[in-house]
Image 1 (cartoon, rainbow, N blue to C red):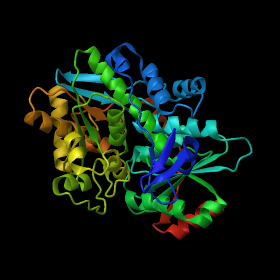
Image 2: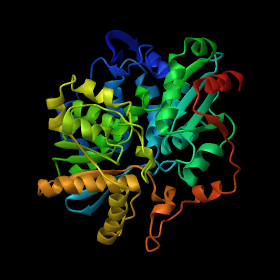
Image 3: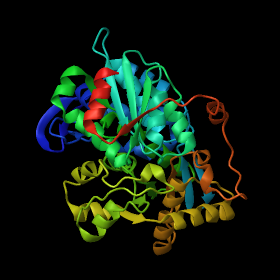
Image 4: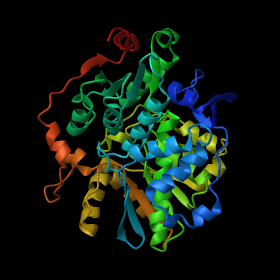
Length: 431
């Protein structure tokens, strides 16, 4: 597998280089030089395959020659060892539950796969790998658990002060070992900017071996492709064929993976990027003007992103052809008030408890179905509702998993830091 920079199509690197570098020096993002299509026979018979078999098929076609197939199978079996079930709410409405991994968020797919890929490529006696990750909520917890105890790695998680839920913060700050957390006085966009500055700082890169665990790293997106194909297999077993996916979107990595699946042959009629009031992409699709803004805090905090990094990848997939993109992708934004009402409406209609991000995806799907009667849609549930206890009214009881209860007794350990790159750089060098 060869990859190029979105800022320089002539730049070509192999898969291990893209994994460890995360971001090219020209500050583009890595993309596959060639996106292979799955054979039609496999697509036609996908309902006969297990999740593991589907994941292996997709990975082997995409990563051919990068990893021996036997090793690739072992990595997938170890990393993707939990389910992603499609749950029927009504004959036209389904929810894809992506929160059954160890950190109770969809980020577990990317974090576990990436950590094992990096461990596989790391050679004995090599310089320690410093993994940097900015999080608006769920990424940090998934990365922490994915890399916890992995030899010769150190993970530094940056999160915005006061802008993650209590449970999310516990997942970031109670791990110890090779995981360290920094509480940044700023927004997620500030945290993400610090990580990007670190990769662009030549002096820091000479001192440390840096890589990123954010979705700017292509190895984060690859395993997310798996569950789109697996969702199609599950829905096909129910006799459905043509699909709409509604995806809660913040940094746009999740929907980016879905669009990679589409380019690999996934039969999808429409993708809907559902956002909160951080509506950079909905505004772009309406006006044609891409204008990032400072992020605003909402109940759906994992989507509080004003400058989504992965949008450049999505535009690149469509060769910056806005008209071609709009045929496949549309986008809607929703307020906190609409989100809270949706949580109640979903519970009253189906007895289903949805987190704020999930509720926003449901709203966008329902809006599409209202204009397109008879459409069958899947909305993605990206986090367990227990992570957001403050948003639920008393009549909605949220089950708290045992692993969350166990965190309550652990001591928080985080370094508080201003939004200042020199402070961050000094911390990394001296830690």
